[in-house]
Image (cartoon, rainbow, N blue to C red):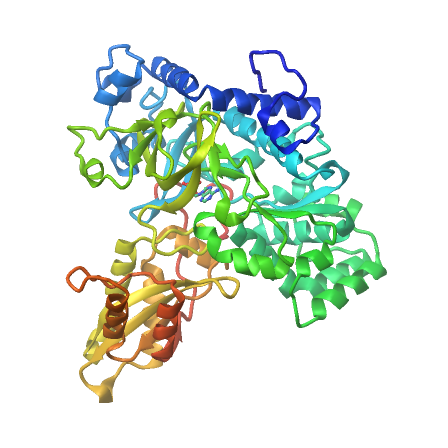
Length: 615
Ligand code: AMP
């Protein structure tokens, strides 16, 4: 897969020499590839743009901008606009409806990847082409060679990874729509991967590919328990996924102990292929069952990960961005094991990797690999550039020309046909590896609240509050002020909304039942990804905390005492700063929770296929 042009001298990579590690020939090839890509960032980027533009020259989209066969950066930048998902929606809709003409890409769109970002409350559909699987796999193939530089002996055991597929649907035109990881795990690239001693998982493919997420989790955890002494690393894609697995163990450990003691599988696991593969793995083991009972029945779950999997060297989970809120909980359960954030990727494109995966979460920087797509950057602190209209496209900066310390919004041009597409991520350049900039993930634009893959922005929250406050009308009550908080102290985390109410008639104030209904109404108003996460128990019931009158004025006084301008003060619509949380919580007069699950059905633009259950 990796084909660096020069011949490979086993260990001449600056990466390996930097840490003084000796590496295998296979790893040396991968490291050499990283070196070549990062040394030649600009020429690789120029080549990639040229390739994309020449192969897509006859697409309807590019023809619209009259590049007339030009494949150079200047023409591209001066003629092709920077766009958002909403701008491309008409084209995407046509592809979804079955138009097979070359609209965005000259290569056929093989499927849609459903992003966790939403548009009008629904998941975004990202077009992809078959060969993108190779690019994704290429990035995956670089992760272990880098990790092996820092953690020796990973070929002596297994990885306990909680990996899942999700429901897939078909668009009216017959294209599959599913998350990028579902697409990858179901591909031959993953299913028929050659044996690699550095990448042996405790979970058999059948358990990962089981469409029922509960049965899948059950079987994967059971395998992890049975092979506990072989486990060298424990992971999931995001921190929230790993914590969900720990909670699953907390709820189900008695059943696991029973299965292991008797060598029989919980009858609730009905998937035939999971059954078959578990029958080969599960044997009566009363000693292990007693061990699990002893550890899990203890009140204190501190260090439970290292107690059950004592040979774990690190956790492999993303804890950057919105996931940083889970770091303290993961530290608690793992006794402070290192947390490796290995990769930065999205449904639009896989971007890059962390070349120092054992660094502290606060120091993680990702190196974008210039062969994945053509990347441009909109300076984030330059408000004039952000506001530029399409007629005078903002001057975007190339990957090789970024400046350390500055923040940028990531814009991508992909082989699959996204041109100058705003991903919505804000990144800060922290340094360079060779000529390649390294990025700290700062935040996703416009995201206020996030617990799992949900991303709720300010306008969605505002709309949800407006919808809920309709219920207060008959009580002559209105919401004077509000703010919100993503509470992740418990698993699953949940949204907390602080409300200051104006109650005209105290004798007819809204009851707990009404305020609980407001919680439910808010949930009903939030986007599809939020509601799906609720139904899947990845997010707990939304909570409204009513605070005393005058609380938000106190909040303003506090902000002003810390230097905010009275003129420009705005109520923060999301809070996390401890003194502010303490102030709010000390003024709470009542708490109310959503009494039911919100409704969730699949994306309306797509039809149901064989798989109808809610996840
Ligand atoms: P999706 O479109 O659902 O695939 O989500 C992709 C988004 O997840 C990215 O655009 C980022 O906002 C976020 N993301 C992916 N990888 C990371 C990472 N390593 N650290 C922080 N955020 C990430």
